Amino acid sequence: MSHVRNLFHKPSGHEHNPSPGSVAAASVATVPENVVTFANAAPAAPALPEFPVEEAHLRPENRLVFHDAPRSPAADRFRLLRMRLKEHWSAGKLKKLLITGPLAHDGKSTVILNLATALAERGKRTVLVVEADLHHSSLSERLRLNPWAGLTECLVDDLTPPLSAIRRIEPLGWYLLPAGEPRRNPTELLQTPALGNLMQKLSPCFDWILIDAPPVIPLTDALSLQQHADASLLVVRAGQTPREAVEQTVALLGKKNIVGIVLNGVEARDHLYYQYYDGNRRHPED
Ligand SMILES: Nc1ncnc2c1ncn2[C@@H]1O[C@H](COP(=O)(O)OP(=O)(O)OP(=O)(O)O)[C@@H](O)[C@H]1O
Ligand SMILES: [Mg+2]
Image (cartoon, rainbow, N blue to C red):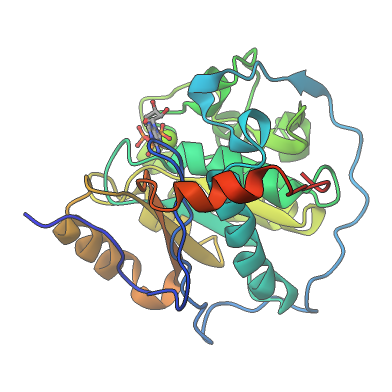
């Protein structure tokens, strides 16, 4: 069985990879012309209401590269991913991004945590993370946040307006709509019209909305969620995700709906390059 290395896109020229076990944004394909375009390129999000603040407990196992190693190759890969995604955002083609992948444990939630932090640019942009993996909601737990009513409650109960279920996560600088209390019918919940209404209400309030979705192959949830996103970003694990699973996922989501693929866990190839530059480089924005 073959494994994924690089699927859609071969970057030209010098290619550098992060250290072993780190997260890598290895490949970002171009958004096709037919991806949904929203009115007015890169509109400024309206001023947000004051959301309650939750303090995240950041630990090494969360693999938050901007916190643990802001000058690492992995952090740089997220800056590259941000740059590529922002091109599409500036063109008014991308705002609601579904993050999914073929199988469980490929690193989707890890990528979301890092990408949200990168896109927020220390509070310059408003980024909402919607924890829409209602089967295995891990973000709140990983950040050791106290639970509060979230997406589930908004979908089943008209009395929970979506903005009331959002909190600002510090020191990461982005906003979270958590999964909420587990229910027995998560798949059905994501197929109700309430989800579309919720996304319509939230979309004008934020610069970016990142949707943490379950894996595509074992569940239909990601396909339901994709209907409410402008594009999907796939996360695959280098040397682990079977190529056949990636191909099946691309076929299910539709190639035209996929903005790119993040290759997670790429091994280091340019250790010396980074050793040389590490002492000179500064990233004041991160
Ligand atoms: N590059 C990496 N190197 C080593 N471990 C990693 C890497 N990326 C993620 N992990 C670890 O793998 C596990 C699964 O990661 P994560 O929860 O991000 O995956 P997921 O795709 O969201 O999983 P699920 O499908 O269960 O939601 C976590 O324990 C995470 O810390
Ligand atoms: Mg996850």
